Length: 122
Image (tube, rainbow, N blue to C red; front, side, top):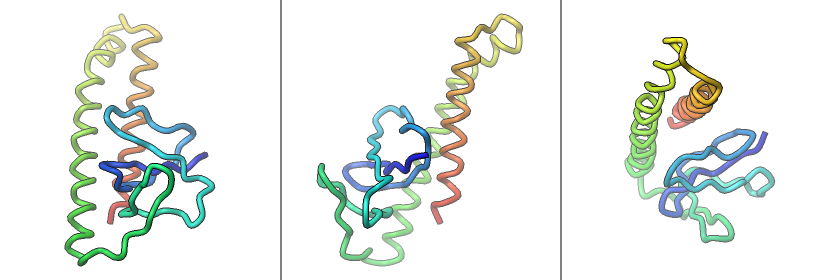
């Protein structure tokens, strides 16, 4: 397993553990498996390395950043639900093929990773 930093506007929003970086649209991942020190949520990506922020201005700012990431995850989970309807309907009706089953499996893996990430955003 590898550890990936999820970036939004060059800010580390979350950390995901997976075999490969997820293929989410408009999302940038950086492999941080062997980085030392290990970057954390709120660190900045310079394009070559991570820089630790001075500190959060306040706990309120930290919570705002975490809430923004939770909101992004909620939208991604809704997108996954919508994308699952057609292949699920095909499989349930008996007309589904390997493509439909693979699509459902990939979407389920993405949803599982997002739900696991939600548990870390406290």
